[in-house]
Amino acid sequence: DAGVTQSPTHLIKTRGQQVTLRCSPKSGHDTVSWYQQALGQGPQFIFQYYEEEERQRGNFPDRFSGHQFPNYSSELNVNALLLGDSALYLCASSLEGRLGIVNTEAFFGQGTRLTVV
Amino acid sequence: KQEVTQIPAALSVPEGENLVLNCSFTDSAIYNLQWFRQDPGKGLTSLLLIQSSQREQTSGRLNASLDKSSGRSTLYIAASQPGDSATYLCALRGGGSNYKLTFGKGTLLTVNP
Image 1 (cartoon, rainbow over the protein chains, first blue to last red):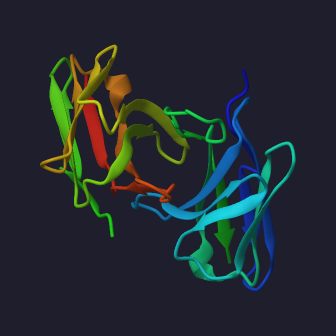
Image 2: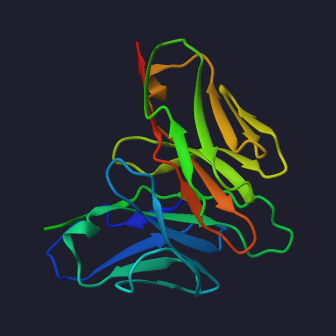
């Protein structure tokens, strides 16, 4: 059973460019969340997608956008990259959609290391 | 706004020692709490999940407790091993329509052989 997979693992972009990161959730999961982790910090919530819609958003500018596909996979897009966007981007998946679900344990991918130069 | 604090920020112990990592939070209206492990430059590995209605969970050498009234959780690691060296993060999921995980900054654990 494949866990959460993210691609690419590393990425170097120039300031002002745009980037797309991809995430495939754990088999059977229907919800994808994205987090940004700066060095030495805990992950910060960017947004969560459920049923192909953004269900909740953290304190991130509109330059950060996302999408969820019918197969539950997801993309994170960042426009007009800034040096401060350099971080580890983490995708997490969970099962939320079924009635009576109690265990919403989140599973994380290995992350995408984005460096903006 | 939920705030999560982990103390200590770093901990170094000799192999075989039992140890406790602490996590405190400001808002007791949580849905669940998870403890994660993170190796340098890697993603997060889920260790234990405690539902809001539970007091503790155990997995192998790990035991996590939750006390909502005091806003605290602890992760107990028995008979520590060098392979346990990593950063340990606690994260709380809010109640109601607050689906996000709020993380602490983590505790960097080093177990010396």
